[in-house]
Amino acid sequence: MKFLLYLVTFFVLLNGFATAQTLIRNSCKKAAATNPKFKYNLCVTSLETNPQSKAAKDLAGLVMASTKNAVTKATSLKGTVDKILKGKKFNKMSEMPLRDCLQLYTDAIGSLNEASAGVKSRNYPTVKTVLSAAMDAPSTCETGFKERKAPSPVTKQNDNLYQMILIPLAFTNMLK
Image 1 (cartoon, rainbow, N blue to C red):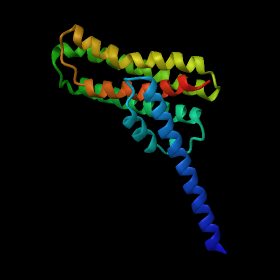
Image 2 (cartoon, rainbow, N blue to C red):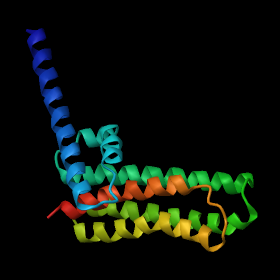
Image 3 (tube, helix red, strand yellow):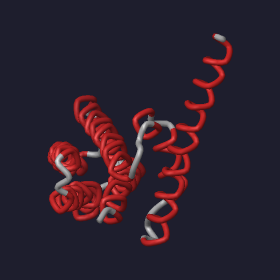
């Protein structure tokens, strides 16, 4: 009898995982079809490795999970820039852009947290607005380096952060 119970539980869990995986892949595919900058593989990988995404039952659940992924990425990048500044291992021309980037990431994290709150209350117009604001941080950071003709030590991380914010924004645009 116990075996039968375990077997049923296993199949229920397996079905739930397969459903989440299908939701993730279909949502990433649809988002990629509407935006040429959207990276399907990054979308699928970042969500399939996130336990919260695996529990998502709908697109709003994926918006929440992908927004949290973006918060984690922005927080990590902020830590990286802070470490570079504290270690004083940077080109002198890069100091001011790095400090600007630190503030941009702080603001982006605030916007991303506001987006999470908006998803919980189903206020999707606000979610779109604050995600769009957060998405400006990586490109504005890179612009600061270009304007000072200084090398950016965080170009790849900024590109990745942009993509990580694009995921919940694209999903939010798909919500009615």
